Length: 121
Image (cartoon, rainbow, N blue to C red; front, top):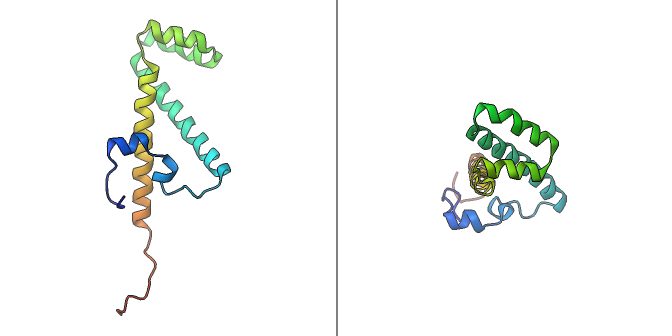
């Protein structure tokens, strides 16, 4: 993949994040740490999206459910409100993956190129 080429939707969905980001050679420990941070960010994005869909009267109740960490009650609440958390999570995961890969690509593009002998001055 060229540095400035955009990923196709299929590459974005199927591609291994670390390989697409050029990070396949980092240690498993570093991968786990990075993935933990990514998943924390994803969780926050999903919660924000859900909060945006709720009426003001339901927001406080939802926050209480989140703090209680009662997955069954949270699932029942979301079903009752016709909120598809799987769809929201998938959408946000793809957006986040694309954002990270775009950011990493732009950082790579900004790095100075090593000067080699090219026969010129």
